[in-house]
Amino acid sequence: GHDFQSDKAEMFSHWFSHWSSVEVDRVARLRQVFNNFTRKDGRLAAQKLGLVLRTLGLTVTETELSGFLREADADGSGNLDFEEFLSLPILRRLKRPAVSELKRVFSLFERSDGSIAIGDLGIAMLYLGFRLTTAELNMLVSRADADGSG
Image (cartoon, rainbow, N blue to C red; front, side, top):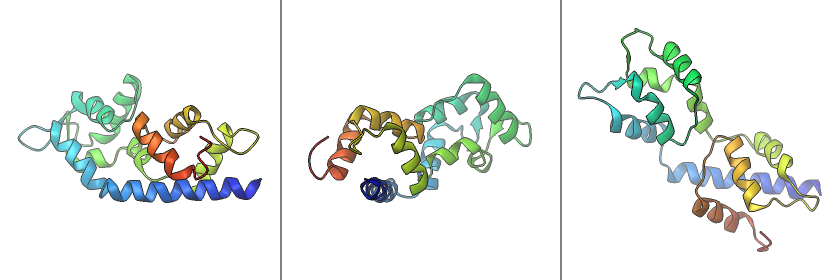
């Protein structure tokens, strides 16, 4: 029934808060990844932006990428500093989704008994902007799947 679905969304929401605390602070994580690709002056060459986003698990097309660069490279230098990088709208996909968004996405994949197959869960997470490994999916399911039904 309906309550089961809402409990499940809250369970996932709880898992997300655990996940985001494990990830430490989002900005610190972004800075860490950003710094792996910067030059000595601490700026990122524009052509490395796609690589940084893919490292974060975000998928972008070349068209999106050039749009992001036009927006973010405010000074037109062909390089991005960390503040310019942080202003990218795509990074919002890395934020913890709202419970209502979780419910909406999970309802797309829900079976008639209110459960979600693990394969569909992976797709649902991608919709939310999270690319999870099989191990992460299994961990998520084992936390949320109290009765072991999958």
